[in-house]
Length: 137
Image (cartoon, rainbow, N blue to C red):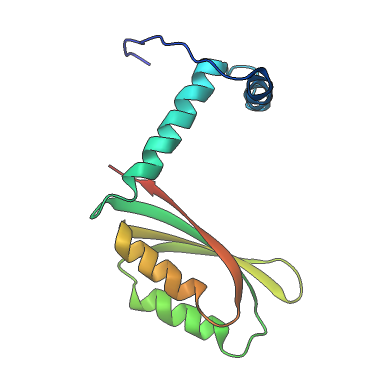
């Protein structure tokens, strides 16, 4: 780490601590409680940073849709080309004979990334999706 560490204690109910220890165990043998707490704090702070007006973010938008839906793919491509300065990449996966999953990487100010994502999510034929944001600062 190369940083001075500050120590503090945390009190929590035993059932919550037991669940937390289960999370620590799932993360692997080289991980301890302190490392998981640091990860959770970083995640929480990152979530706060992406809502700051003007924040520059990267987002992954994952959508699921039926590729047989009339002109859905053309509409999705049109939205992405309209915002080509913000669309970094996309990955298209054929889940089965009818269902596709697409992951679209979007960059820019948080507000714009959310607008683009909402346009895609609101396109008729998109079954569901989720945007995950992270800061790049």
